[in-house]
Image (cartoon, rainbow, N blue to C red; front, side, top):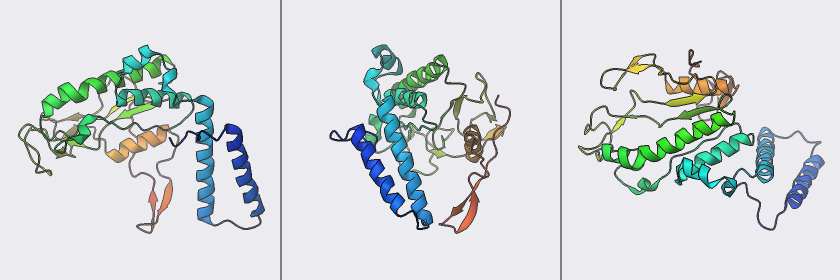
Length: 258
């Protein structure tokens, strides 16, 4: 919705509106704009570019995709969102986020991947099949179109799950058939960009509960992503909440992935 023009606004009319805004800005050019005004101008320019690209390249028109392609990804919201992600990459969008969304979000005990009960049944029947289908199709599609070498794909949750079933660490609603929150070790799938395929980086102990080799922190992963995007992780910004300068990321890029 946010990048579609209203029905009564053509691209020509949209262009005239932006010209009017530019004209108003020119009238006030003799004043030194405050910092927040400059930030707002940058946001306007970014939004304008996004809307124009969306109209020109029509990346959101999933109906243009062959039915065979849409079926290969799976006719789930997640699967079709990954097709959209590929179309956005093709149209030059440099950073795309796809969130998991399915019917289990209405489960109050363990919505989506938060498997506080029926862990194995939910993974086997509801969660892994549509993810495996869509994600494998997405990576293969990027590769077939020559996009995987320049696109870094990262799939992960916010933390892991307890290595033993039925253990309560934080959520008292965790049942004997479920797994609770576990931040000590978890897995990320990374493909494309600087990453060589077919490898496992790092290892956990025998129970999968703690990191045993080549630890990678969330900050390290973030630094790796930023480096791929040609953004220096050590750039600083002013944290207005803590009232101090901070690095964009405190981690270090992971070496040896190529």
